[in-house]
Length: 104
Ligand SMILES: Cc1cc2nc3c(=O)[nH]c(=O)nc-3n(C[C@H](O)[C@H](O)[C@H](O)COP(=O)(O)OP(=O)(O)OC[C@H]3O[C@@H](n4cnc5c(N)ncnc54)[C@H](O)[C@@H]3O)c2cc1C
Image 1 (tube, rainbow, N blue to C red):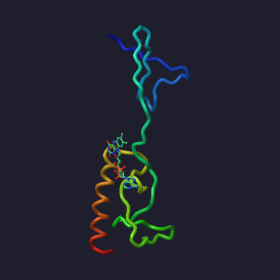
Image 2 (image 1 turned 30 degrees about the vertical axis):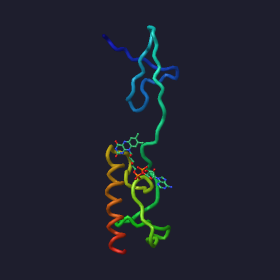
Image 3 (image 1 turned 120 degrees about the vertical axis):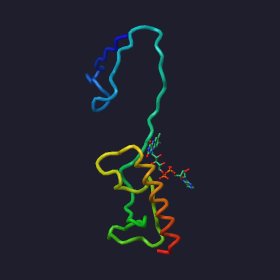
């Protein structure tokens, strides 16, 4: 079967950056699959240091406050790479626990 792509009503030939090609549906039966949006990762959040201590606006650690995972910012850089979101949660969660256990 030959697959022919097309453009949508807005003239788009992909969903984003060449990915997700629109395909015409011409022959019944037509089937619709409900979909929903989900937030996978954020690029923003509180600033932490290498010991997972939350840093205030003056660059100083806030006593007794630690963070890891999605609520921390600055890990992804310019673009999200699959695995880095879970990676930062695991890595900095462990580091936070080590920092707390060390009494820093
Ligand atoms: C659909 C989807 C696909 C993803 N795919 C990938 C992937 O392929 N690779 C990747 O690296 N990352 C992926 N991610 C991102 C990754 O799942 C998250 O970055 C990661 O789970 C964040 O971990 P976290 O511990 O910061 O937050 P969460 O995993 O959200 O954990 C927060 C926890 O806190 C609990 N909680 C909230 N409020 C309270 C409260 N008041 N009291 C007590 N507990 C509370 C919540 O119930 C939850 O268990 C995906 C995310 C989604 C949604």
